[in-house]
Length: 166
Image (cartoon, rainbow, N blue to C red; front, side, top):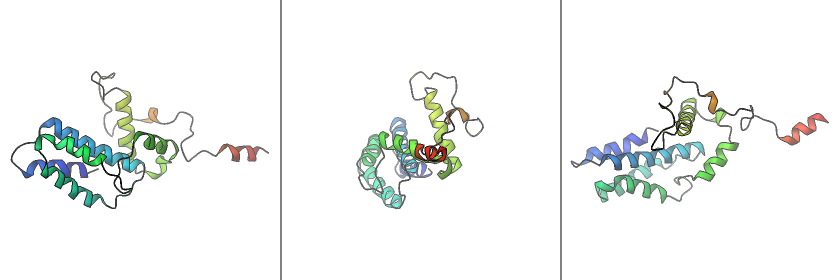
């Protein structure tokens, strides 16, 4: 997910006028969401270099006060299978059936589970429900994992269980 810092931070350094902090946060958040969602649904990364160049052109043509808004608008406008922004329904469906514990690199999986834990603690709300975020890379995150042991892709379908019983 290193593309995030490459894009807007480098853009910020290109010209003298600083990008407003809120717009920088909005733009970085949009890029992070786009990248993480595409990683979760195993979206192709083939055209990321072209997309980055196109995004920088859009940002250079726009006002610095609108960097975050323009980044979000640009990513939402992508319709190609190689660049679209996966929606909530697709993401949920994929995470419910995909064997992410076997297919995703541990660092990315941990990042996603820590973000889920932060969300459950209310850190995306004005008043969080917990006194601190998950301490990155040092806390156990097993309470986010399925309680039944029925991890997607690891359990047998009902039909094979019935056939084995007969």
